[in-house]
Structure formats: structure tokens, C-alpha cells
Image 1 (cartoon, rainbow, N blue to C red):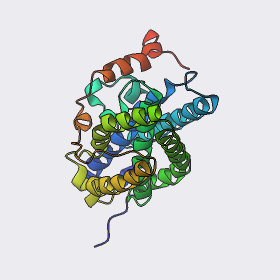
Image 2 (cartoon, helix red, strand yellow; image 1 turned 135 degrees about the horizontal axis):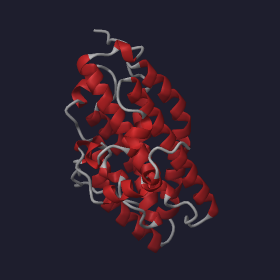
Image 3 (cartoon, one colour; image 1 turned 90 degrees about the vertical axis):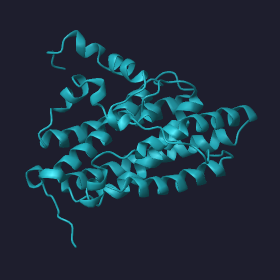
Length: 263
């Protein structure tokens, strides 16, 4: 049976609309939060090339979040600025992987790769979304995403296969972050309908593809993904680690000085 194609916000109703809104919040919140975390390396990365790259990736991700929030606004949700600056912490739907504060370079590069490997697979699926505006947006975003993944994979290989010290730091980061990365595929009350309506990929299928992809890259780099890692869920339900409140406070500091100001 052919799936219904939804050409605009006016054409999608009921359960399909609710599932699409849920999907867009997850996409936008993940990109916004991890993009903000990447900005914490601006001026602090170990080499100039990495500093520029991380800043550029952060800019891309925050811009992509704005694009998803714009689609949400077309569906009747608040405007993008309101979604960023006015929502309660529990209203955000980002996975815990995105939330952690800046730690070591190994920690951030492992997170970067695990996240962007997932994002690349997700965008490859979303290009076939039955919601035409999302499919069109995805075609634009895939070009940026290709370079994000290449950058993450390069650092995994460079540090995983370097010195005994760098290998140890990278393996420790993989062990710590892998359960949180599995949280990227947390099911929501709308997940089954998201896939059934053809709006986005099935999370379990996506997770299997991601495991295969990242296991190959990590193994080639002398790293071992934890085989018995248990997914850490909660982010999609608004149950966030403490760093999320601190992140929002920092992100909103200037806005709070004068919420009515026009920039």
C-alpha cells in the first residue's frame, strides 16, 4: 500500500502530524545542544585546524536546529527563538549524549563521531520522508553532514592508533559514551507511527545500522565498543542530566539581559 505524501503543513493531520512534530523536536534539540557544546572548544582545541573545524561544525548544527524549528513553527509550534529561549528544561527532547559539558579532547571527539555517524544514517533515511518539506531540507543538509562525519572519523583513527596514552583516553571515552549514544535511538510514544507513516526511519533498524558502522570504524582504530552496553534513556522524555540546566543557563545568559532586544 502506497504511503501518503504530505506536501505542506496544511496537508498533515492527526497522528501523522503529532508524530512529525515529535520527530522534528528530537532532531532540532539534538543539533542545538551538541552544537552548543561544540562551541565550547572555540579557541581551546589542541590545534588551529581542529579549532576552526569544531567551530564550523557547531555553526552548521545550530543552523540545522533552526531549520528544524522553522518547520515546527510552520506546523503551529512557537517560533524558533521561543523554542530555544523560552522552553522549560523538561520540554527539550535531546539525548543525554548531547548534553555533557566539555571534558577532554578525546571525550569530545568520540562523542562527535558517535553522534554524527548516527546523524548521517538518519539523514540518508529522511531524504525519503513522506513530509516533503523535511525531505527537501534533508537534501541540503547531507552535504554538510558528509564533512562532519569525515572529521569525526579522522580523529578516531588518529588518536585511537597513536600512542598508548591517547589510545587509553579514547577507549575510556568510548566506554563512557557508548550507552548514551544508544540513547539516540530511544523510542517515544510516536516512534512507531513515525515509521508507519513514512515520516522518518524505524529507530531499531537505524540503531542496528549505526552499530555496524561505528563498530567497523572503532575496530579499525584499535578501539573496542562495549558489547554489553545498556542504553541510557530518558532524554526523549525530558529527563535530563544536571548539565542540561547549566547549558541552558549559559546559552540564555545574554537573552535574559533583555528578552525584548532585537539583534
